[in-house]
Image 1 (cartoon, rainbow, N blue to C red):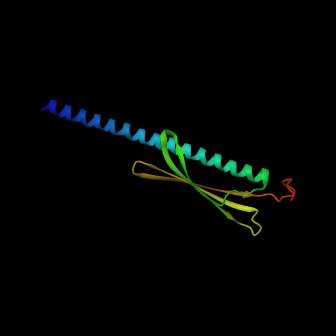
Image 2: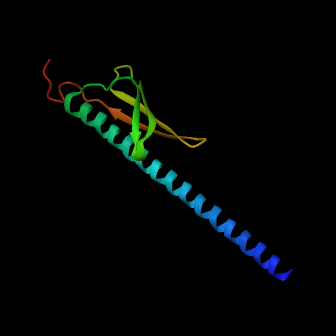
Length: 126
């Protein structure tokens, strides 16, 4: 009887260890995906700012494209630009990056503001 109790106790402990290991792997994967998404959005933000500051060109107002994450995971990248001033020189850029991880739908949202330069400030002659 004591042996049966010890075996049941040890097997229960083994199951708990196994479950905690699998949970930690899931959390690690989620952190890696979130880190890749933050890096992706940061790169796209830099590209839009660079384009606007070098050429005074406004980025496309709406963008909805697929993106790929490490491990071959697919994601959606959306950008929506809203002018905040009547002359369209101050823009609000909303970035939404979404992906699925198993049954869980993850979403990362960032908002940035961009001030376009007047053509004479950018050295562009009309």
